[in-house]
Image (tube, rainbow, N blue to C red; front, side):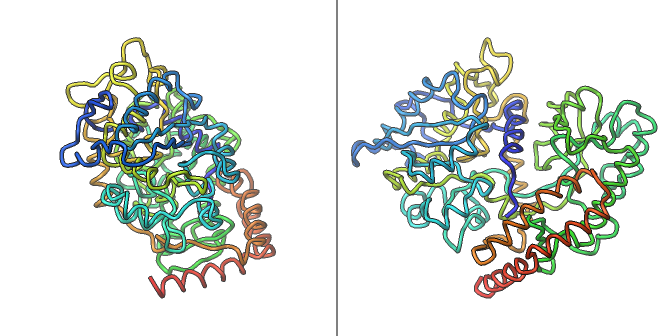
Length: 520
């Protein structure tokens, strides 16, 4: 139920575009489709299929940065078309949409039956609703017959997590699969003041650090809230350390991962103590006065010497990513465990629309994105020699004449949206083994959330959900950014949520969850 706004996703996408390491990996050298090298052990995935099936044109719509359609879009599309015609007897047309319009345009495509076959359709763009309504197609049988490469590539959590009522409607990008938390700080000030980043186990333990920075580093905001806030960290407060992790499900609903009970989120020990702490810190001057209104990028504020912290997920590669964006070495206070949640597994999905002209061929194309690094990287990075240079160590660098990845002619920033990110190129700004580290992290660090694979049908309480979502939206930012007295705000939101039907929602969710557990 918790939805990530399209505007925030656009912001995060912009960050990824600024840093190529967010869309990078390893793969064979690009070549014309007729010369594309077979991947060892995967030659069957890239083998031409001649004209066994009637020719079809398929369209694939997804959000993209740098204005959506790239300067060299036509050049790259020609290479993609040559490849798909040879292997699938199909022309797959990419339809990149600028982030400013994609959030409205893609759902409209799906609802209207427009001529589009494959769409980017994560949970925050309406995935569950479209699965329920039949606007997107069930995929289990199609994947069993035409997508064995996808099934063998994706970990079980990325196959089970996106299911709705036990049926898969969306194919996840093979990338980081956990809901990690982190607080990133400039290493220079951490070292200067002798802070131990491994010592922080509760949010309250940060306060002496914030006071030290405020008292000794004039002009630097100790805890800057701009495009992100401390919610990312996910550590307990001192008061809530024995409560168990409570997921914020939106609409005032919390889910205790230990007791497996749905509870009023804003009445939990964590919420009551955490939001009061944030308000107290703001009153003490540890958080910027305009938190909640200021949407300045945290990394830019650090780079300008005005901030000490930024907030993000903490999977492998993030320290390097933020160090580049902040213009100086960063270090990390690790937050919550690497929970694998439904939201984490459903944050980047592709689906087939009900208007799809050839579902089998569509799955065959997507299967190639997971098994053939040539076509994956062609879609993500463009043409070797024109849009990037392949280095001896397998990483890629900017082509002659390009000063940044945003002016290389083709950088849609979509490696986290579809396909197999673990076979995408790594740029020279990133570590060569970035994806190997991430793959190991996914295997060893992830902790499945108790409700992974469960989905809620809110039909019976839709009016109450709508009302509680509206109330939650009204107060959530106020609490997270310390914009008003937390004690008074918590009392107000809790009363309004209960008056709007929160208890009915909790009862219905618990009922459906317990039924799911009984047959799991």
